[in-house]
Amino acid sequence: MSFQLLVHCDWSLDSRKRWMVVAQRQGSLWRVEPPELVGEGSSLLSRLRKRLHQEGAILVGFDFPIGLPAAYAKLAGFSSFKQALATLGQGEWANWFNVAQSRNEIAIHRPFYPMRPGGTKKSHQHEALGVSDSKTLLRTCELATTDRQAACSLFWTLGGNQVGKGAISGWSEVVIPSLNQAGIWPFDGPLSQLESKFPVVLAETYPGDVYAQLGISRGGWSKRRQADRSKVGRVIATWLVEHPQVDASGLLAALEDGFGEDKTGEDRFDAFVGLLGMLSVVTGERAEAIGVDESILIHEGWILGHHR
Image (cartoon, rainbow, N blue to C red; front, side, top):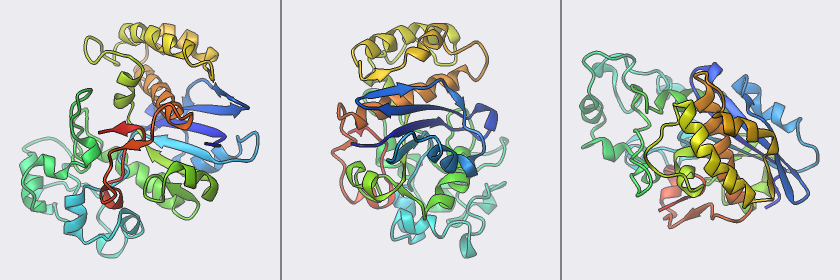
């Protein structure tokens, strides 16, 4: 693949916790730069294009969902995810991004819930949307694997593992405004086609998938603890030695330190880990997707590098 710039964004509703790591191609070498704040979402893609050292495409990964559960998309009557993106937030879908404050406000046209804790249950959402359980609102790529537990449903917006609010801000600030200038993997095709058709390609990533790819054990550590990040950083350092095409020499001190003692250290850590997962795909070490039925790609999409 001939992408010239790779970017992985660890996204958050809080702009202070939005961190990204950038890698520039220099011949056969990928030079990784230190973590930095993402900044204003609406200007992100234009700012990244200015950083290119030569002509070529940019691949940007985001750790929020990019796709809709197939069961919901069918209930909503969308022909495809791209058609949904062009519709959401407008007309009869004007309230789609407004999180329901009470169970009575949940509807096909307003699926996100709840606004705040207190008497809220996931069953309220299931009943209002006409589905049987939480699993029905999961995309295939979000189901549990041997390496990780199932993800949280796109539409649930409460708790430490919720992804709904990040998706709302990410779609509103970056994805939808860029529909006319960026390709969206895999909805617009495989990466080999997208890099020659679009100046910027957007993809969904999940650092939780990448841990195992780097040789990091599933349990016995937490990314929220600096000491644990430092411990698994030694595993990542070994991976880097085995991948000389990736120059992350400027981050070795951060790896050893666990990316700092402040609360955003885990965000910088995941921004870096996610980038390494993207590099594995772009360099051909890992397939972008394996075992994915074409019908899944119409509505649900996929996580870059995720294998069933």
